[in-house]
Image (cartoon, rainbow, N blue to C red):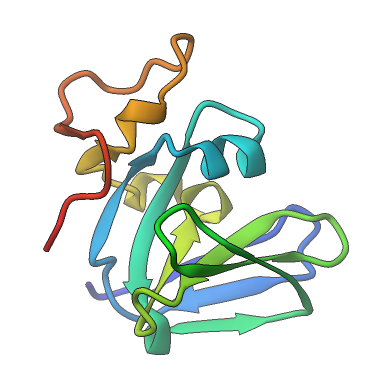
Length: 137
């Protein structure tokens, strides 16, 4: 990747630069993503935590997920745009929200996860592999 990936919130108070390519990208249909996104799924990129540089003030919201992992989601304190989340299950990576990208074309979904929680009205790319839960590494 020759250029960094950039993005930020709706109002511009939060900006970020990602210096390495995403490790994975896809759509998540878990019930947490449905609630937080007010939609049927969220589109995410898993990225190296140490490659993400964020400026601006973020609001942190933490909770325990069904997986047993402690989760924290970060959003702009001004406009509430979600920027990324992190999990105690993988402390070296964060989950960047694809909707916050400056250039949405860099998002290249590889799969749809947590399809066991999918709602009937949320159709995603049927050509992508699907997983009822998170695939094991």
